[in-house]
Image (cartoon, rainbow, N blue to C red; front, side, top):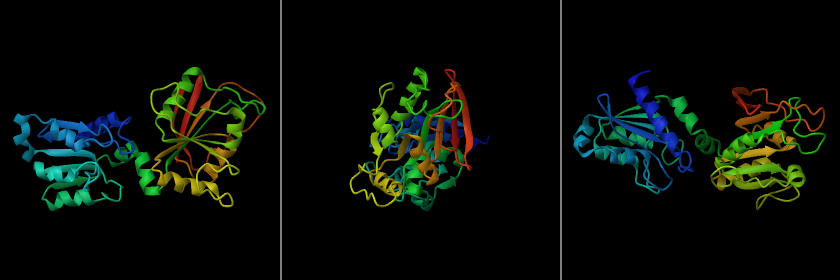
Amino acid sequence: MTKDQTFMQRCLQLAQNGQRNARPNPMVGAVIVCGDRIIGEGYHVRCGEGHAEVNAFASVRQEDEPLLSQSTIYVSLEPCAHYGKTPPCAELIVRKGVRRCVVGCIDPFAKVSGRGVEMLREAGIEVTVGVLEKECRELNRRFFTFHEKRRPYIILKWAQSADGFIDNGGKAFAFSTPFTRMLVHKLRSECDAILVGRTTAERENPRLDVRLWSGESPLRLVLDRNNPCFEGMDTSSPILPQLMSHLYERQVQSLLVEGGAATHQSFIDAGLWDEIRIEVSPVLVGNGTRAARIPEDARTKKTEAIDGNRIVWVVR
């Protein structure tokens, strides 16, 4: 690992501390280095408050401030170049007089997207872009998907028997354990919205909230052609494209789809998915509703054995 990669890795570690409160802003970490010594570091703690670069400069001790002219600032995401809830970080970097800036990846947000790097270079600061770019994009994959595809990042989630059924003879069955159910609530707390189909809503009347984990409950949606789940829905036209546009307009960056099988399959058939979380119980039921078909272009990201069940994550 190169020196630049080492310090960018530290940026990523710091950025993850903002997972809970930074959204809908991206998670960002920043590290200021003189020679081989970190003299300042920070991350974006909360939406509406100082960005990672602001907090990194604020952490520099007074006796180390003369070193800034010899220093490099590492940032996992391109410094902003526009006035939003806070002033532009690119301007702050210029004003502080660092000699070099290393950026993990370019910000896809239209008001930034390359302008931050341009501002730094015009000020005579040496800029390197793309250090651990894949890892930096992965950290904020929901943010990137929202801005690049103009839709939420979509996670499909279901639990099934070992023989591939999501219920027992058409009746609801608890394949999850108390512990894995808690993990589902954790996942819910990390998503902006949650959706089920009409059949699941009528059969189980799920609350779809966060009870077993700390955090805010996501926006609850029921996909029902006969009962529009959002204002202005045209029931004579395909619903999912309309839903994506509606959620984009509402700034919903992540959507958890919990079922049932027909709803999952409709998202898969439309190509509207980014991750699929499948919890497989060792229980065999013999008959019932078959789980949705895994897409042909899916690949297994990871598999975990938890509390006697198997959790499989697949991605594109």
